[in-house]
Amino acid sequence: MRIAVPDNPDVPGDVCRFEDSVFGLRSFSLPREVGDVVIKRSDGLVSYQLAVTVDDLAMGVNQIVR
Image 1 (cartoon, helix red, strand yellow):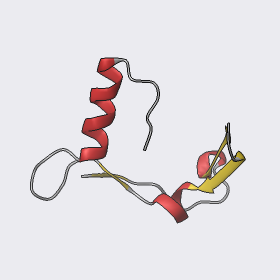
Image 2 (image 1 turned 90 degrees about the vertical axis):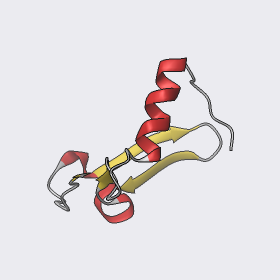
Image 3 (image 1 turned 90 degrees about the horizontal axis):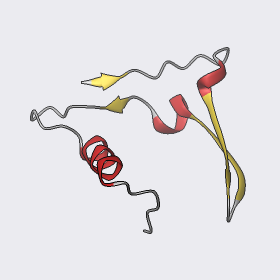
């Protein structure tokens, strides 16, 4: 199961922009660089990226160091 990210340059949400405290202004095209977002994998499990994000939100995590 995926959330489709259509490649339409006329849509304002096509480009994601944000200010990074280290690298400054960052931007990227969601459809070209990220693509569709997987919600549920073919083996029936919820995707790790979604599960860990929901878990972090529930635990009040607001900073992640990698």
